[in-house]
Length: 556
Image (cartoon, rainbow, N blue to C red; front, top):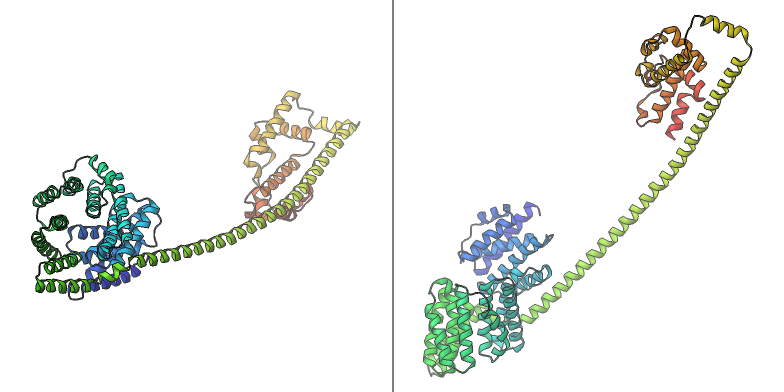
């Protein structure tokens, strides 16, 4: 994504974050956040995690994760990118759920993260996602007493526990089991999680608060199931006193107090229930846990009304309505299944759009494939046509070579016949010419071999001033002996033999790759002819074609 788009996305996300708590609630340095647009996605996620873990600035954490999610949404090219996107969605869901209490956005982010982790099998994030989704369903159950919400919430808590155990995330397994016990203990469903309790007790012991709390919950649940309410209450009370009353343990203390309140209510000790509810009010206000304040005010109003404290009951009932209206919690939680329907509908629309996109891609690929096939077919046809022309040209050259060979054979035959005739004058002339030669047949054969090798391998043959004397020096044989052997072996003069060698080399060069670089003049000079006219005349006398005709035939 271009940098300018990142900057625009950053500013838009920032404005959205500002509206979450009110424009006057938090001061945010806009220039600082705009600078974040130059950071990599990994760096932005790291900053968001730091803010999220330290709880130092939830608005900044929200901006970071929203920026990362915006970048990654359409860039899921690998499992690592999908995991980063799922993490950003999970953190956004948690922030919207427990900080801004925007349940619609919490659900959409968490559900998308849930689908993504299952699609890419990202087990490390599954426990947290399932646990937070379960919180939404349990909130709805508390408000509406809808049994479907309870069942869905418990199923998600189970999945959270199972995936935490599978990934050796013992703290998350402890939290998931604590939530399970908390939500099934007082609804007569403890028997449904006996397998989870047994599995948890078989895990390695941990020296962490979540693990100790979960173990206490297991013991207390067993006493509660056995009807030993006082012993169960003692377990919760003892564990509550052991917890450090620091800010990070506030939710843990609230959860334990809620268990104690339920047990005290079953035991009929209403005054102690009121005392713990007021303590919960103080803790929830300190931690800004507005979702817990709603339930606390509702329970305080009910207990004060039952105790005859009408004024106090009305005061807490008013606080309950004010807190509820500020969060619009009932409307959103009541519509959680509508949210799910809208999410599923949007997902189906996305799938249809993806299917249409793939169909368009397939159509484009099909057209491209046809074009490629057509192009390859055309190239094959052109190649076949050129090969036919080449075969025809080669056949023509072959025929010309045959004619040249036939001519050479005829010449040799004529020479042999001429030599066999009793041409006494010529024979006498030859004998007179080489009368002083004492060369034996063996010496002539050796000299002939040297001459042949020199003419075929020496580049000096193609120099302008190459002469019989040059050849004589090359083979280290007297001038007269070289002339004699050439005349007797080739039946031709030295100049005729040299011309044939040079013309054959010109033909070879014209048949080789890169012959286009030669002009006729350059070719003539490269093989030893001083003029184009002399070269053309000798070339045609030997090949039957002019150099231009020969070149055109080779190009076809």
